[in-house]
Image (cartoon, rainbow, N blue to C red):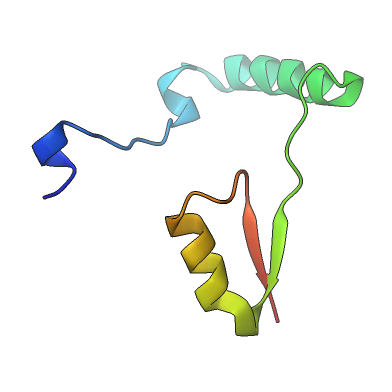
Amino acid sequence: SRFSARSITLSRPNYSHYTDTPAQLATQANRLFAMLRTGAIRLAPPRHYALSAAAQAHADLEGRRTTGSVLLLP
Protein backbone atom coordinates (compact mmCIF):
# COMPACT_ATOMS: atom_id res chain seq x y z
CA SER A 1 0.00 0.00 0.00
CA ARG A 2 0.99 3.60 -0.30
CA PHE A 3 1.64 3.85 3.48
CA SER A 4 3.81 0.75 3.78
CA ALA A 5 5.98 1.92 0.90
CA ARG A 6 7.03 4.87 3.07
CA SER A 7 6.94 3.02 6.44
CA ILE A 8 4.01 5.16 7.61
CA THR A 9 1.77 3.66 10.28
CA LEU A 10 -1.38 4.81 11.99
CA SER A 11 -2.33 3.59 15.43
CA ARG A 12 -4.89 4.56 18.00
CA PRO A 13 -3.86 4.04 21.61
CA ASN A 14 -5.97 1.74 23.72
CA TYR A 15 -6.04 2.87 27.33
CA SER A 16 -6.12 -0.73 28.55
CA HIS A 17 -2.51 -1.01 27.40
CA TYR A 18 -1.53 1.43 30.16
CA THR A 19 -3.63 0.22 33.09
CA ASP A 20 -3.74 -3.22 34.67
CA THR A 21 -6.70 -2.89 37.02
CA PRO A 22 -10.00 -1.04 37.22
CA ALA A 23 -8.57 0.90 40.18
CA GLN A 24 -5.65 2.14 38.06
CA LEU A 25 -8.06 3.15 35.30
CA ALA A 26 -10.20 5.08 37.80
CA THR A 27 -7.13 6.86 39.19
CA GLN A 28 -5.91 7.86 35.74
CA ALA A 29 -9.40 8.93 34.63
CA ASN A 30 -9.78 11.09 37.74
CA ARG A 31 -6.43 12.75 37.03
CA LEU A 32 -7.44 13.42 33.43
CA PHE A 33 -10.84 14.88 34.37
CA ALA A 34 -9.22 17.08 37.04
CA MET A 35 -6.81 18.49 34.44
CA LEU A 36 -9.72 19.15 32.07
CA ARG A 37 -11.66 20.94 34.85
CA THR A 38 -8.73 23.19 35.76
CA GLY A 39 -7.87 23.98 32.15
CA ALA A 40 -4.45 22.30 32.33
CA ILE A 41 -5.59 20.33 29.28
CA ARG A 42 -7.86 21.87 26.67
CA LEU A 43 -9.71 19.99 24.00
CA ALA A 44 -10.39 21.46 20.60
CA PRO A 45 -14.13 21.94 20.11
CA PRO A 46 -15.63 19.54 17.58
CA ARG A 47 -16.22 20.78 14.07
CA HIS A 48 -19.85 20.44 12.98
CA TYR A 49 -21.07 19.66 9.48
CA ALA A 50 -24.62 19.21 8.25
CA LEU A 51 -25.22 15.67 7.07
CA SER A 52 -25.77 17.12 3.61
CA ALA A 53 -22.15 18.38 3.78
CA ALA A 54 -20.69 14.93 4.51
CA ALA A 55 -18.64 15.06 1.30
CA GLN A 56 -17.07 18.34 2.43
CA ALA A 57 -16.38 16.90 5.89
CA HIS A 58 -14.65 13.93 4.30
CA ALA A 59 -12.65 16.19 2.00
CA ASP A 60 -11.57 18.32 4.98
CA LEU A 61 -10.50 15.21 6.90
CA GLU A 62 -8.64 13.88 3.89
CA GLY A 63 -7.04 17.26 3.26
CA ARG A 64 -5.91 17.53 6.91
CA ARG A 65 -7.93 20.70 7.44
CA THR A 66 -9.48 19.45 10.69
CA THR A 67 -8.28 18.73 14.20
CA GLY A 68 -10.17 16.99 16.96
CA SER A 69 -13.59 15.44 16.44
CA VAL A 70 -15.77 15.97 13.39
CA LEU A 71 -19.53 15.65 13.85
CA LEU A 72 -22.15 15.15 11.17
CA LEU A 73 -25.52 16.57 12.22
CA PRO A 74 -28.85 15.59 10.67
